[in-house]
Length: 247
Image 1 (cartoon, one colour):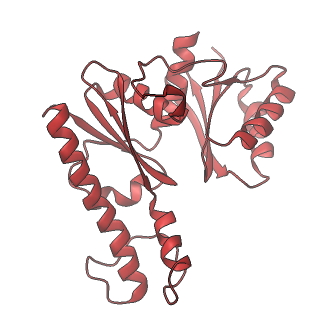
Image 2 (cartoon, one colour):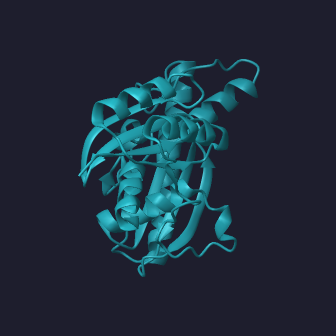
């Protein structure tokens, strides 16, 4: 069995994962709007003798660039989720086309790996809550500005608050402006997650599990008390699972 290259194109980063069956052989991430992803993909394709790529993307321009690069390297177009291959989950959105493919991939992977009912919280550029009902269908969710976006907004929309990088705060009570901002964002969003998840669990039932993923998931995990599973690679795993179901 030859390895497959799973690619998750997000608004901030592109995550790449090489899978052989269920086993993740290699994982790497590059900024979405850098020029480094094509050389990186070329190295991965050559090293692991990749013969198939599968993409999940929320950035059309990057999808086109990477699709062209993979076609050139392996001699055939990659499979694009939502176009060439579809997430095998019932979608209960009023307009199913409005749901980002990454959210459906996470929902499908969550069901396969952790069961249902399920709340998946993705701490990425935006924070998304994706809800899987007890009958394993995609019920819908919530979309909230992410941690980094919130810090940027504080800087851009105020006269005196500085531009800072996202990091762990020194404590709940900030002793300077930087740590007050970090504490507000980290503890504030974790409290939001706990509160929203509690409300959702009342609707879904006490057996509901909460899975957290996304680029900021490892940062916030120690500040949130109600997480059942942290799975930073949930989307990549889902892409691979969908490819296997397609085969």
